[in-house]
Structures are given as C-alpha cells and as structure tokens.
Length: 376
Ligand SMILES: [Zn+2]
Image (cartoon, rainbow, N blue to C red; front, side, top):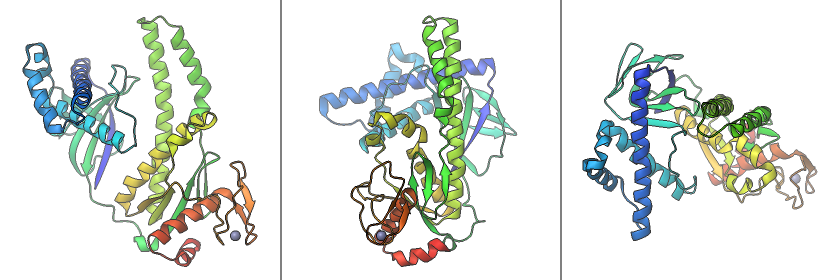
C-alpha cells in the first residue's frame, strides 16, 4: 500500500530561484497542453493521449522560441501532462470541473518520479541539490516519487509517496463492526450506533477575519508591494482554515477505518446541494467529499471497506425498525415518530441505520445479522 509523507522545507535563496524556474516551466507546459487538448477536441472531437502529448512536447522543445523549456527537468514536465490527463478523467467522470489554466499565484508543484535520493535528513533533487527536510515524523517504506510544492502563502513542502507494509496491529476485520454514517451540518457525522461528532465549522469561525483581509486586499493598488503583502496575509489565513479541516478529517477518518470493517456513506449530490445559496458555504466548509475520499484510501490500508448507497435511496424518510415511510418529513425536523410502529427517531441516527441496512442487504447480508453486530 502507498502512503504520502509531507514535510515542510526551507529552501535557500538560490534554491527558491531554481524552484521558481521549475514551477514556471511546469505551469507553462500544463497550460500549453490544456490548450492543445482544447484545440484538438474542437477540430476532431477526439482527446489527445499521454503519448501523443509527449511527442508534441518534444517537438515544442526543439523549436527556437521554446529552447528555454530545456532548462526544466524533463520528467517533471511529463508529470504535468499526466496531471492534466488526471484532471480530464476527473472531469469526464463528473467529479470535477473542466481543468483551468494554472496561474502564477496558485499553488505550484512539480513531481519527480525518479532521480531523487536521500542522505541523512537531506533530500537531493535534480537541478535543485540538497534540501533539508524538517522531519516531524520519520519517513517509512520505499519512496516512489517526490512532489515539491509552494503554497499560495509562500510556504514550501515536499510530499514523498512511499510503498509501506500494511499495518498488522489491528483486530481482524471479523471482530470490527460495520457502521452507517450520516454526514450533516448540525453534526458533522452521526453513526448508526448513535455516536455524534460535532461540526467544527472552521470557515464560519474565521470568516470575519477572512472578510477583513479580503477588504484590505481590495483597497491596495494593483501591482504594489502592499497588495502583495495583503495577498499573502489572506492566503495564510485561508490555508490555516484548510489545514485545520484536513487535520480534523485525517484523525477522524483514521479512527473510523481502524475501528470498523465497513463504512457506509450516502452518495451525496454535493454539486446539487450547493445550489442552495443559503447552505452552500457551510457545505463547502464541511468538505464531505474530501472526508469520504480520506476514508476510502485509508480504508484500503486498514482493511475497512467503504461503500456508498445510491443518492435516490430515502435514507431519512424510512423507519429503520419497520420500513414505514414518512412522506412529509421536512429538513428542519430533527426528530420524528414512526406512524407504523411508534418508534421515536433521531433523524440522523435513523438515516445512518438505514444506510447500513441498505448496504448490507445489497451485499447479501441479513439485517438481523447486523443488529447483533451493531449492538455488540
Ligand atoms: Zn416504524
């Protein structure tokens, strides 16, 4: 299995300059390839393959006007073509918007698929030399590739993807229960066992600060030093929010996949939901898709399966005891009583139970098996 280890780095002035060149060339190639894709598609209604793009790039690098591209590490440029291919796939599968050109102030990154090596706490990269890693946790496994990035606020990181052994110290999956998970805004999640996790509302908490920094930025003259300073301050605050969110989601997802053998989520139509203007910000802030993604890949490490139940399944409206359907249940009804069997339900816990039942029955397991698992 693969695991990424991320470390902060502090490049020297010379290395910063060298990185700026590498980032710039990589960004140029990404945007150029995007343009090629769009043109070819308009003319032929066909997509360019990775190998076709590689060929075009080699030709481009031989043209007198583009000889400067040879200053870039050629494999980093090829990796950008791969990134673009991935962005296209995500778009066609409906997970992402159409790829946009990268801008100078966006997050920058280059990936080295090989040619790197380690010496003590130094990481050596082609064209850059030795970078001192700030090792807040040890690197494990066999490194497969290295990504160097610069955030919008000007911090540098390396992410090292390693092949590591699966973790052996967990109870076997047969001893870990299956659980349904209802994601929400009131509570970030509610499990079918009744556990509720508060929604930390990271964005909401620093919203006023962000708005103030945004106004400050708008008041500064374009191209001025003060504007750049204000831009960095805003980027730093926004990154702080995103780090807090990721940290929370990493810890929670890790705990869930270690404690369970199966996690069942609802296949949420996030894009449809954010059309509700009043809730859009809170939904973005909760970042459910990111959380489900974290659970998915961590589940593979810890032997926990992660499944999604189709979005047209009425998880909230069905009674998890008798199957009666509450047709007139409204979004604001946090609790309700079943008209069939009289059970009083917490809305979210009932939905989580239904998700679990639905997934188990589609996997061919009896809901009665699961009741015993659930109360165990
Ligand atoms: Zn009922």
